[in-house]
Image 1 (cartoon, rainbow, N blue to C red):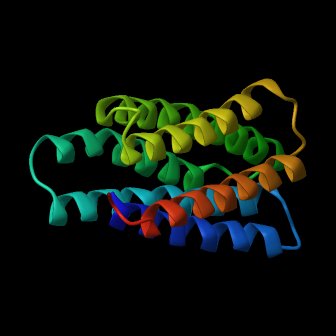
Image 2 (tube, rainbow, N blue to C red):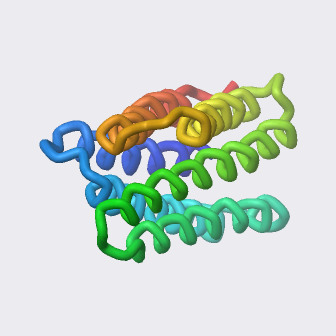
Length: 169
């Protein structure tokens, strides 16, 4: 969990900073960021679990990696056109937030909420579900939507970085 958290934190921070310091918060920037984020998360998840762990925990990581890879690939394949890109970005971020949040909530429950790892998964799940719910419920313009996605990435990076650097008890 610590290696995965550290690598996810680095990826989230890099893409979050890219969005933050990008002068154009357009749907195309959001889709490229989401694409690289999804593919990166899938590669990190699979690589760490295949190298470091064996057994059931690797099998449980596969759905998370598949969802991340699917969202990432779809984000890069959204057809050009302003309205299509906006709709695609909002739909894909909503799907990412809700699906990854539910999977991390499952992981938190499996690890038990009273453990450090369980609480880390729970916090990540809450961030993701809030992102998905925000995109699902609130009528966001594209500048705000891309900005909220960037904010999610930076907040998630800080949480995952702290999680990765906190010594195990």
